[in-house]
Image (cartoon, rainbow, N blue to C red; front, side, top):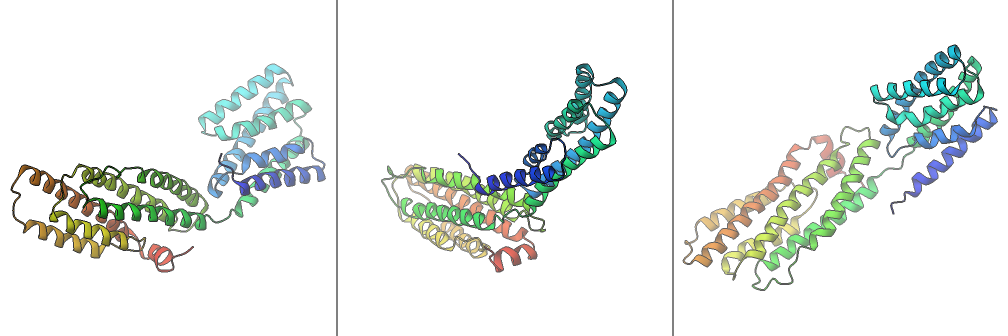
Length: 331
């Protein structure tokens, strides 16, 4: 069960404040201001503002339809059905389906009161303003998700570091029966959580580097896809010879250097030396040796891809992003 205590408190407080304010102003259907507030508050500031704008436009639309329909043809269930039908069509055409529920409630107020006068319209506009306004104001104080993102990011990177370190060990073993891919399960779960948090961070941030964490998690997801291929190749290796030792040493070095702020330049240089080292080796003398050497070469190519993904990520960052997220290492 995914419960956000901050959002629950915000929704409850917002509904009570909006409804109490409406009662204090002696508005008709005052409790509806609390419902409007509940419907207004979304997970992100941008989503809240976007939906509120749509609902404001829809409020104007439903008021015009009610004024025309009820004002000319009177208050009857047939007229009410026609007004709602036209309003639903309007919301569908203008892609404002999020505004339907709240403004249908407004339409029922006009219908139930049998009044579409200026005073009634002002009453409904006040309900909308109190409810939506309270929701927007509360969402301005959306708590920063940076600390939560950083915590998940650190945990995820530690999982990946452990995976790489295990590879440096198991690539030298003949018996890999206990070497399973379960190590990727928690990592995949953490990456999905981190991706969701990064999306929410984008919605609550107005800085130009707002998508840094989203780009970061996508980079780690790409790297994990490569690691899974390396894991499969290690499992397929036969009896190990000294040829695997340089890759094992590189994997250990890579696990030690694994970091958010590592631009991977040194690792790419070390990989180039590894390629030169293997190209200078004698050709395999047996089929088994040939197959193992081919797998090792494939692992080496995937390691280069793994490191290159991070190097490209670092290269694509602008100076503002590096200053904000690397040099200052914000928490």
